Length: 237
Image (cartoon, rainbow, N blue to C red; front, side, top):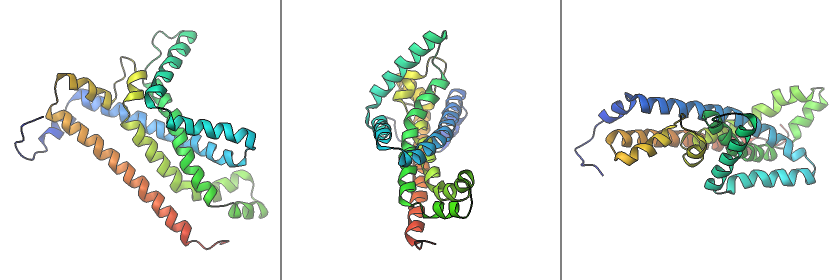
């Protein structure tokens, strides 16, 4: 949509000098980072608890986790909007929507992502070392801190990176639950498109794409390396 005049990095500097873009970028990074931390904690707890649950408890929770991922995002966004509006009305908030509602909506979705990644790792690594730790007198907390968590760390890190990526470039859910004062970077780009595409917008979109690709690549490498280490390990050692 622009006249090509040659390669230049000037518009990246112009984008980073625009207060609206830097403010939206900062908010997007803060929400994505907070979402990744909370989703990692909740997702890891869920992944560790589900294999130990009875079937009549595990099956509904498992179905709910998968349903969160397969539900169309527009349906998820509208449902989140209705929930926050009704909850805010009952609690007496005049404007219940903001960055907090974006964070909560992203956490609900990404907790399922982290749980599935960590659960796959937890199930595949077996219970041998945990049982040995118990036999040697270690308690549940010590076993988790010294045995389980170090072995789950690559999966937790990969799940956190995926959660950060999904939150950072999310538009549909954020658009519905953001309110009028919270503007993430994808929402800002969408608003600017009404006035035409500028080189600064293209540069901003390129930065989003670059950051997303880096996070996904790191998550893939972490999972691949952990898988190779697991395959190379000697059973029982």
